[in-house]
Length: 171
Ligand SMILES: [Zn+2]
Ligand SMILES: [Zn+2]
Image (cartoon, rainbow, N blue to C red):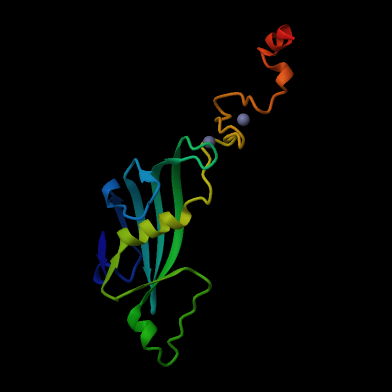
């Protein structure tokens, strides 16, 4: 999804588009199970363009705690200031670029690759750790059993083991 600069008017302009699952190239261990619904709103200022984005996508991934498949539904908003490389390389007069700590993205002044921007934002918004559910118990560090599915045998007292009584009979 490429937007040419001349498509962005002085007034707010809005673009709605969809990124197909096959267009993602940086998702690594995750993969998209739905197309990404994107909404980009531009505001053309004197020296830069403000982009307000919103996207929704569902990712299939793996729980970092129990390694089971996990689904991650993302619904995120972001703001980005687009600055032409020309404005960056030719600072002159009072052409000072106030960044206000906002994320910025450089572009060549002609076209804006919205697909790339939205995929980058998706990567940025990925949670540091993914849990399949809030109360995921993870894997037992000793035996590797998935504690969501199974009781962990190594934690329980051997005397409580159902066959412990057999051991006593042998004595
Ligand atoms: Zn889990
Ligand atoms: Zn265990």
